[in-house]
Amino acid sequence: MIKFEDLTKGFWVKDERKIVIDNLNITLPTGKSLALLGRNGAGKSTLLQIVAGSMRPDHGRVISDGSISWPVGFGGSFHGDLTGAQNVAFLARVYGVDTDELLDFVQDFSELGKHFAMPVRTYSSGMRSRLTFGTSMGIPFDTYLVDEVTAVGDAAFRRKSRAVFEERMRVSSAILVSHEMGQVRQYCDAGIVLDQGRLDYYDDLEEAIDLHQRTLK
Image (cartoon, rainbow, N blue to C red):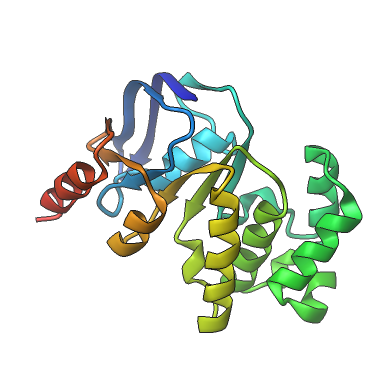
């Protein structure tokens, strides 16, 4: 269960306050993998960061009864001056998992080679995504926040990413942002649509997709 209480977030844009999350009061159900849909700039990435706790709302709060990952593909949880390995070891201690096991998993999965021992600030955006995705998949969360990350890398790496994500989804749920409706239909049970600061839940995934596609016209 993830519950939003009076959740609000806005940004100043050219002397004008733009509200992207507008006083949300909604409870997302347990055990559902949700497609988070909305046009570009609607605030999907902002909402994921607030849910993860990596961004503070202007008002309100998020309540959850389970563990939630950071937004996969977002490198804000990783310290740029630490190496990839040091970041992974730190997160292993934070989340109470075996450090050596997580290091071995991420090093093998991410295919970063010698860069795993280099500062994260030297990484390309794709390398950061490999590191963040690999680390999150190596930690057993109840809910994974995923933002297009399985599109990173070559075809072989994308296949590997999809395989490990599918394995995690057998026992966990997700909030998934994707512009590929085939991917949405493959992984998600229901949908939430963010539009003009409002978030609506749809138990029928196809209804959510239809509404989303109509907002794009």
